[in-house]
Length: 519
Ligand code: NG6
Ligand code: CA
Image (cartoon, rainbow, N blue to C red; front, side):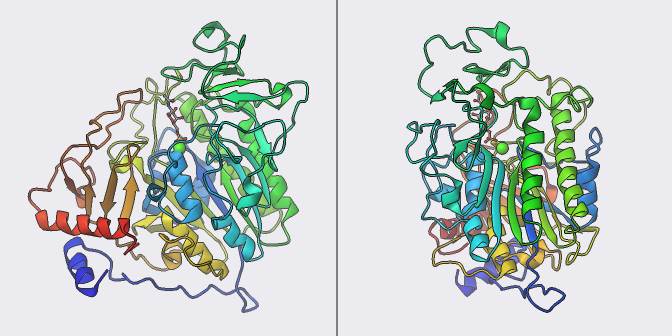
């Protein structure tokens, strides 16, 4: 970006005055040295901006998340990088926009490792700073060397140990995709030698029932669209698998398994700094929470899953408290993308929604170019260093977590690492309200949008205004350029024709970012 361009952009777009990248002074610990807090990223799945009590939801209470918010900063203008999981997570963990890389769309359960071992990840960064590192819960970024060729009965040749994580206990993809087993330290957890595992996304294994052929076997959940292949735990999935035996998960126990493995990791590392990338299965489909929650929320299983998510957060907070390490633990709670109501299972989520607004005030939802695709909750808490009970309207993006946390721990990044990530530490810690000058958002069909605090430009797309394959979601795709005044929030009135100068500025900013000339 040249200087002239910055000033034009600042005037036109109302960008924050802090445009150049600044390094934040490191918060100091009591002894005057760097404070090296524990860092936990809690990444919910498909949890919308409007799905939490502290963001205005009334049919859920989510008291643990509210307590976390009350202890730190609640952000009202945070964006995931993409409107679906794989590209969103890829970007968060690498500090590189997923749209720069092929093969970063929603991954199959037998995708090969999408982040390659030679890439420098957020976990590598913490590791290099002397942290113990873990990934727990949903992964969805591929495993092994070659797609479709993994031997699930042996250690995987490429796993999270190669990406900077000392410990991992993960779901390979999503709960609606096979294989339906946890992977711990590159091997199937609780492996059952009497039931060797085979996985295919091409065809079924002879004699194995599918949801399409045997709907009578779907005793827990039936699909509403898609999701009619292999049956595990009375729920049909995407993809085919055979075997697994006692290693197969029970959906109702996933939240408990993830929480207990996280707690064990925290206990093992209570006396040294640790980084935990903690990704819940909630509130992704299939939603089949534990019976402690199932049937309790008026919104049905989707509401129960939100309550279960809150319970999970409470488990972590409680353990940190018991161990006396809560004060010096930085927690970042957010979601991988916006919300979806019916995402493929007949869980009555649409019918029972009532006046709940999963995306809050935003238009669209998961998959969309509209704000509902990427506008997500963000809470940052660190009792020792972050002032409680703050609200921040600063425009922030997940893409900046990498560089910001790098500043926090005083890490030195190799050349080219996290190339799209900017240091926004002081904003994230609630010490200023500086907007990111631009946030880039990726929709499901790869439509890119760019927004500033006041404006949003959506690039043209021919993919159609509504999702046609299941979820009832407005995509925000139109064949012509769209410009919205974000002070009006709702993305209703296309003002591109009225403000060609703003369109041109945003288009050229996006071009600079695409070309790697700006970030
Ligand atoms: C879609 C699935 C949806 C969900 C999504 C990924 C169908 C019809 N729909 O393809 O259910 O799994 O992929 O969600 O298969 S994400 O949050 O992990 O990106
Ligand atoms: Ca998701």
